[in-house]
View (tube, rainbow, N blue to C red):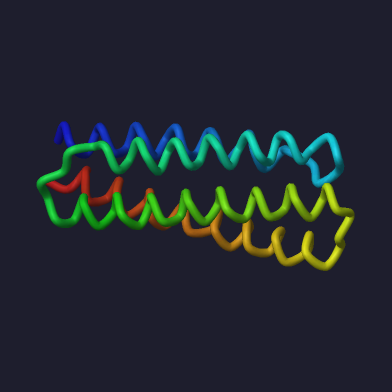
Length: 119
């Protein structure tokens, strides 16, 4: 149970980082916020990697969550760079990538919560 709680806590911090980051715009002023969100998501991935897990299922959830967080971070940096360059095509691709990565988060957390709540 303590392993579940530790991983859920990391995931909750990730949700907060995503929520703050998705409020960032894609204009010049928003690129700094996107980079900050990317840094926060890299930190979330690193924090998830540091949680000591002995259960194979939790190790799998952690790996999935780390990959998602890294995908969000990369897409956020790509979106910031595209916004800085005023490149609409790259911005659209990066926006699609960030949305795809963020959509992965809920199913991972839902599965983690179900696993942790099972008797």
